[in-house]
Image (cartoon, rainbow, N blue to C red; front, top):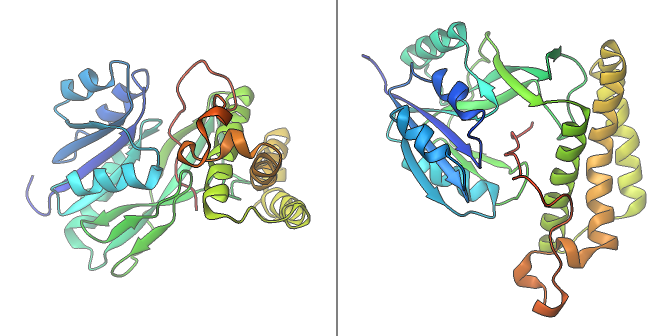
Amino acid sequence: MSGPRLSALVVARNEEARLPGCLASLTFADEIVVVLDRTTDRSAEIARGFGARVLEGAWEIEGDRRNAGLAACAGDWILEIDADERVPPDLAAEIRAVIAASAHDWHELPVDNWIGDRLVRHGWGGSFGTTAVPRLSRRGAKRWGRQRVHPGLEWHGSRGPRLRHALQHQVDRDISDMLRRLDRYSSARAADLLEKGDIGTLAGNLRRFVSRFFKCYVSRGGWREGGWGVLIALCAGLYPLLAHLKARLEPERHRPPSDVPAGQRHPPAGPAAGPARQPAPAA
């Protein structure tokens, strides 16, 4: 393809079931880079079957693994995609057109979020979901922060207009999957709070629960989605509250392992079976 070169970057862990569909939607890119974090399934074989360049390793910090992927990309522009996302043809064509003409350094992509076979358009927010993600950027314009979940972003350059066509995101399979995600997110956030040395207060996080629920259910229109809107608003509000309570009541379970004496270490909280799914950064 002529014009600026585009790298598609996928960061994943044990995603052999969803990786083929994701990679098949990225064949419009000039190169595909797949970063595999502590992966034990067939993800590497699948990625190489699509002609991807594979980087395997072990990163405890989400921001570190994403930065390793950005550094491995050779394109003029980088499109970051998670394994549970798909780029439809109309978005692919728009991305090629934008990078050929844009005078800016990064752009947001709209997101259509699916729970199972239901498209849920309203109510996302509060670090539990988003309707737009800053995933298209020039090489060198973006750097992720060193957090375990929802890392911050450092930008260089100017922000361009949001694209029109939406990225398709299979955010959760069902309600149980949503609740497992809440458990993973809040555990990772608890570790970040303990490492920072400031877990906040119970009163402050109770206020955040109320404000986040209101913002998602009322301000962002979650009420339009019926019971699904209630679930999303509850999870958005519970995320910081649960993280605080885990850090406060069970610090030995959530403190980073290097900070805990060997005799006091416990297995990670939550179900032992099955790998953690890589969360999508949220605005």
